[in-house]
Each structure stands twice: as structure tokens, then as C-alpha cells.
Length: 144
Image: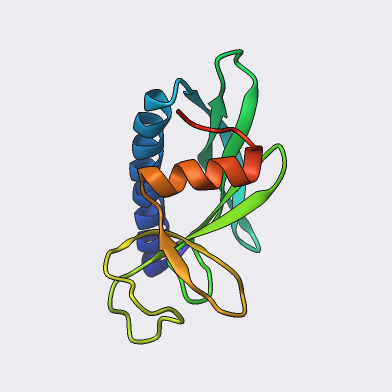
């Protein structure tokens, strides 16, 4: 891996770690527990890397959703993670604020976003409240 690609991948890992910390805190507020499992993803055609996926469990310890890292290299974004529940999946992308080549307007913070639909491309920043909405969408789990 070139130095530039390694820097990109390391930043992706940092962004994932920060997201997982936030989600663990938000989940705890809703009587959910989190745990992680190691997975491998492709970095390029010949290289693989180890990352963690985050599992969210309800009071019965049933897994209701999983956050799965997909790639540090995404067109128009600085990374992708899939939020997979028992009913649906939401794709989250890491967007940088005020990037001239951005496909989306009103990206005021470097953060994880959910894109409402491909045609309109409205981006929603992932925060505690919106996380609860997405959790309901992907898993039908209603937070307190």
C-alpha cells in the first residue's frame, strides 16, 4: 500500500473508532449493548485489512443491527459503512465539510452522513436523534 493510501485507510479507521464510541454511548442510553467482532475487508485487489464491525443487542441480547465497514475509498466520500438491521440496510458515508467536489450541499461538519435517496441526494448528519431514526428504519427497534 502506498503512503497516501495508508494515510487514507488510517484516517478511515480513526473515523470508525470515533463513530463506534458515539454509537456505544447512544446505545447505552437506550438500554442496548454493543460489542465488536473482527472482520477482513479488501483494501485493493491484492491486500486485505482487519477492522471491527459493531453489533447492537437489545435487552434479550438479540442482535438487532450491525455496523459493517465497507471501504475507505468511495466516490465522493472518505469512507463507507453499512448499518444492517433485521429489516433493512442504510449506507453511511463520511463526508468532509466544504469540499468543492462534494455532491451534497450543507455539509458543515466532517462527519458520517446518511443519503436519503440517490436522486435527490439529501444528506443527514448522524447524531443521537438521527441514529435512533435509522435504527428504527433498519431494525424496527424503537428507542426510549
